[in-house]
Length: 350
Image (cartoon, rainbow, N blue to C red):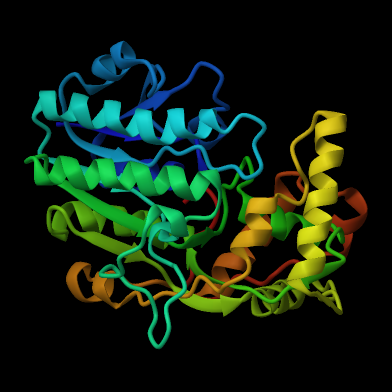
């Protein structure tokens, strides 16, 4: 049986693909001609060139496939052409679901986002039963993932064996792009972070989030959602861990959201004039108004999902960013190399 993985050249998808290979599965990956292949160049996977927006290439990739892990997503904030986000995340998902239905796959794991669940609610943490509306989704990325998840849930209701997973914020080695979260880590390590806002995230080791996908394929109930998360942490707590790992000081300045929002508007104008991507995306600032904390107990209870140490995962991330040239020479010398934690073998490339 062939297992198809989309997004295998990305951060989370590459870990999913490697774990499938490690357990002996024949893995096929759909890659765009323009994709950077660093994340999978050492993996014995079959590569099929194509694009989720191109139905013909999707059908080619689906030939002979028994299982699908649809991890691919356009994960950017502040894009100049928002239609690109919807084309990739919504139309691309719809195309893949259609092709999977025609192929009669036995299981389809759709990687959604915690963003479709982690909306402000009084009195309790959001969980898989939280009902949110499109109007609560801040920015094009969140809206596109909300709409794409609705496509997956609809396909499940129509008989396709779809299980939805909602990863929180993965951290660890292999974030080549890097993701928006990875950029926060890199900016901190390079001394480019002058202040921070009072916000929070649920953080999970990327290797565990990937393993949760495999558990969902084996144990997940069709049509259900599973949050693959670890620990609820404020941004300040995350920076404190990075400080202990790197020897860099946490910025003293805690920015009011109004100030951060004003800076985002100024940066938006500058990015338009200079024709560059925003360095302070307004979507990210608006999202930071509430802490994206969630209840992760359903995946633990039904899938047997267990998330490891966030400190260790951040340590692996710091080592990886340093070893792969994301830190300037001056700041790389300042980073105190984190000591491997005994019994933790999940280092980059494993």
